[in-house]
Image 1: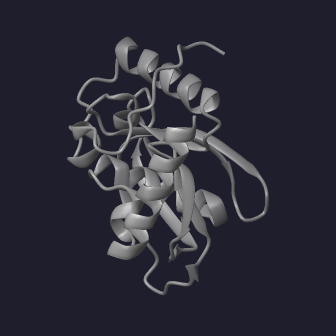
Image 2 (image 1 turned 135 degrees about the horizontal axis):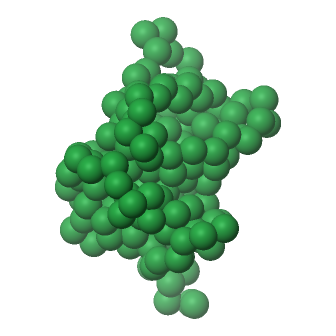
Length: 172
């Protein structure tokens, strides 16, 4: 694998809390960024990673996670647009985030999702996901829109997750 693992940005870092800029150039610099994103995601043992999670203000994410059938899906989506089904069935599973290290919390999300966008070379793509992949597509697109999963929790649940994260970081 090529690429260099970069540090993961943590909740509170400004780049995580604002919408990212669209990618305008599909060049070697973008390809190198994607390589670094995969290296960073694997080093942190994640299943998805948005560019702003390594401090880069661009609309791109990578993923490597299973769908509901356990089939691993791997790829990159540049300038994604999320599409949710009209008739939704919710998955009430737990969710976590590399930028909120440690705790997880239950968060209902549609069990199917799709993103349209571009691959690293600028060709149009659509990625459809079920199960964990559907959650990942939604989670990573949220990141690029300046939203963390904890922003979707109740105030009480969000406060609990942040308190757990701080306690875990203090112990480390």
